[in-house]
Structures are given as structure tokens and as C-alpha cells.
Image 1 (tube, one colour):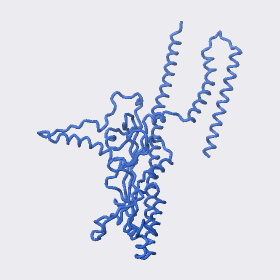
Image 2: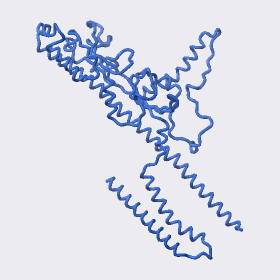
Image 3: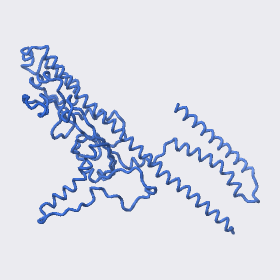
Image 4: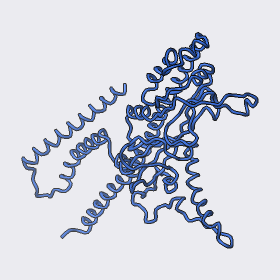
Length: 405
């Protein structure tokens, strides 16, 4: 029969073991996992920043190509007489010097140009104003489509007295092939990459598979902001999850007759979506949304692109670059331990086990138990294992110092 002190000591030892294991689990979940998730979110924003640079580079490529074409036409305008230019550009398809402009467009705007030949007056306009030529965006864009308008659109408040001829629009370009190629060259962990305009309408979607997204506003209306740092026992979950702002019922009272009840409710529902969309235009945001029955993290960043050589609102286009990633993928990656951590834990476990085993053996052996040859061989094997573990730890430290240097 066990003594009361012996029984109490065993219970205390068991409780202490469970307490240590629980402490390790809490520390792992609330410090290591939270730190990993914070690092992953920062990494996704860095990926978005690089993709934004790639997107801006493709727009600059198209803008600089159009500007170079305008300068070529300006040089041709200066070196050629008017009558000679008219003679060489008349008749069949734009021949002579005008044909050089078409070949330039096919070479430097290949894959995005609609190959619609510009008129003579448009080419003459390009040569007359090469420094003000830029890209124009559609009034109601549905894709990453830009075109060249000559004379270019100007602010009427700056030049109210100037009279210009009727503008012509040619060189319509769909930048999707260029943007797809630029995004494909840069490796990232997003399941999908979107480009939307200021109203939330999606102009570009990289993935050909998966759910289709045409508008960001309805998705953002039901989304919740990402919280990286949780409470100490946040991993246990909660029976009452936070309710999104868009799902919170808004108390609206219609006037007598009820004629404006529907419009009041609709405007109340649109306010959270408009607010979240404004937040996307102001800075980087991360939102947890539901798309196609799955939970995603939606990382968004505003991107301002230069369309023309003039400064101001007319020479820029504001877009929203969005990266979409599965919540399950982020959670799995945040819980995964790096190989270096696993190696250190394994080495520390081997060394601690080797040092603690003889002590536990001496502590719990009875007075009648003898030291057998088998115990001697086991002790020798333990010493060799501890020595090898300590040696590997020292080699690992020296290797890390050498790599750091």
C-alpha cells in the first residue's frame, strides 16, 4: 500500500507535467503562431507592393511606347513637306512614312494593340503634340483597356479660350496579356490576383480557374477585419463570433405611408460596403471574406498609375490591387514550424532525455534492485547519445555564425 506522501508526490508530479505541457501549448499558439501569422500578413503586403510595381511598369511601358511613336511622327512631320506627306499617305493602305508608324505599333505594342489603322489626321496630330500625348481610360471601364486620343483631353479650367478640333481615338490597347506575363514571372502565394477600379468593379483577374469575381463591394460588405493578436485562450474559440458591420441590423423608421422604407434600408446596407471600399483607396487593408463557400483573406493595396505626361487627376488612374488567399492555407502555414526549430527541439529533447534518465533511475529504484550489465550498456549508449547531441548543437551554432558572417 502506497504512503500518503508518496501518493501526493505522484499527483503533484503529474499536475506539474500537465502544467508544463499546457504552458508550452499556450506559448506556441499565442506567441509563435501569432508571430508567424503577422509575418505572413506582412509578407503578403510586400508581395502586393511588388505586384503593384509590375503593374505600374506595364502601364509605363505602353505610355512610353506611345510617346516614342508621337516623337517619331514629330520627326517625320519636321523632315517631310506637307504635300509630300499627303502623297505618300494617300491611295492604298497607309504606305511610306505612315507605314513605319504602323510597323512600330505592331512591334512595340504587340499583343495588346487592336491593329486598327489610325487616320492621317490622327498621325498628324501625334506629330504636332508629342509632349502632351498620353493614355486615356474609358469612362466605364470593363477591362484594363486604354487608348490614345488626339488632341489629348485637357482641363477646360486651365485653357478655357483654346479651341481644339474634334478628338480622334485610336491605338486601343488591352493590357491584360502584358500584365498576365508580368505577374506570372513573379512568384507569390496568392490563389488569385485582382485589379479593380475606384468603384470596386474588377477589371482584371489572373486565375482562369476558381470562383469568378466581378464586384468587390458585395464581398467587402460581409467581410471582417483580420485580427492578428488574439487573447490568451483565443484558440479555444467562442460560441458567439463577432458579427460583421454589414450584418448588424440598422434601425430605420419609414415615414407614414412607407414609401421610402425600401430605399432607406438599401442605403443603410450600402454604407458599410462604401466605407470599406473607401478604406481600400486610402491604404493597405486585410479583410476576411467568403467567396464561393470558402473563407479567404483579401489583401488590398491602392495603386496610382501614370497615364500621361501631365500631372493631375487627368494624367493618373487610381486602381486597387487585390491578392486573395485561402484562410486554411494561411492557418496551416502559420502553425507549421520551420525545420531549424524542429532540429533544435529534437536536439534539446535528446540531450535532456539523456541527462534526466539516469537521475530518474536512481530516484525511483528500490533498495533491493541491483545494477546489472544491461543497465551499464544502456547508460553507455545514453552518454554517447548525449555527447552526439551536444556536438551537433555546437556544430549547428558554428554553422549559423558562419552563414551570418
